[in-house]
Image (tube, rainbow, N blue to C red; front, side, top):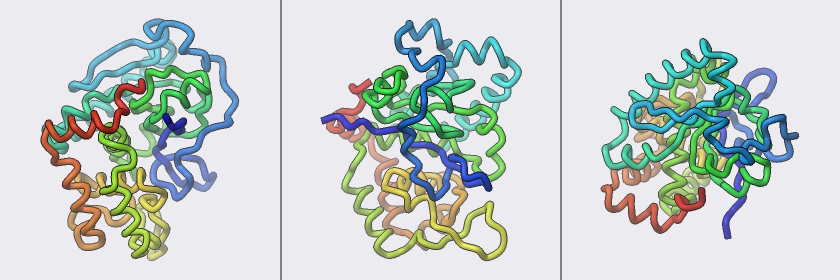
Amino acid sequence: MKRMTPPLCVLLTVSSGVFGQAAPADGVGTEGAAPNEIADVERVPLAEVYESRELLGFGLMVSREFVRERPELLDRVLLQLEADLDEVVHLFPEAALAAVRRTTIWIELKGATNGGMSGRGMCCHWSADWLESVGLPREKAGGVEILNPEDFLAWRRTQPYMVLHELAHAYHRMIGPDLPEIVGAYEAAMEAGLYDEVARNSVEGDKTVRAYAATNHHEYFAEVTEAYFALNDFAPYTRKQLAAVDPAGLAMVERLWTMSADEIAERVAAAGMMGEE
């Protein structure tokens, strides 16, 4: 049975408690929001609503409303996205990168208020059925979306690897949403309390918080991926720190990101998620 799973969102904790990357909130639920004026976008041809582009081997679907109404803001978003994707291209192993490049990146001007969306920042869409249920295009399933362009630009000081984080979700979806390797590493880390009280780059002094990786095994995989390849905004921040704090998590993420092209293809076929769109 297909699961109607809401998108996994990049979360941010600020004083107002809004959703963004790496906040210790539920992070996946956006159901129940009232649809806006373009919630029925799937009822018209996508080409009438989105402009298809390509950037560093990734397919983009850019809101024509964005192109028309805020071209200067779109230019800034695309410039930053190119820089982010350039890092991804150099960080991800070749076989995994080829798989991740199958991910479409959707760029919206008002995505945070479309259909069932109520988050901010970015998200990865997991369920075509959920998208359809809130009046959004099924084609977004498996894709990464920039929901709010202002957030995407403004949150970079503390969350520089938003794009990598969301692409990690997309890869996770491809190779299997509930892989025993990921679930097992997550449950072991939770049982050991490894992520209960950690430092965060936006928290001053010695105060500790519950890591966003503790939210669920989906966010655990994405957060550990950030630390492994780049820099996370919660401790452990780096690969070296990850090795010291959560060696099982490091071994898991290293194993899954360094699989051969054939093994990735086998996992993708077994997961059966790529045909859901």
